[in-house]
Image (cartoon, rainbow, N blue to C red; front, side, top):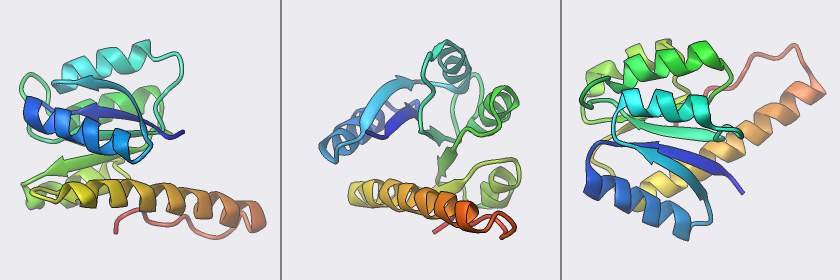
Length: 141
């Protein structure tokens, strides 16, 4: 089962993401309400999540700052940033996010996005296994 860590300061959205993704068969390993808490919880995970879905605009520490700190600990962590601010897309992707979701979006979209991401990840692993000299695939849909 795919393990997802949700980082979102809006309680209603966080609960909706959890509900939708659980219904789709994903394992929500934990949630955090800001970037600072996300970093603390990430350090405490014995088994790291497969994907982190992280809001960009949050109090205390934003998604970009938190992402950079998490990637400094484990550069293989897969983080998708979610934001209504489309101007930050290039910046977050350039700093290590594997995807960007523009808000607002339908809840069906987030589930489908995660499924496509997982499928692309598997295809990428298969491609590298078959030919390790091919460039990596982009996870932005």
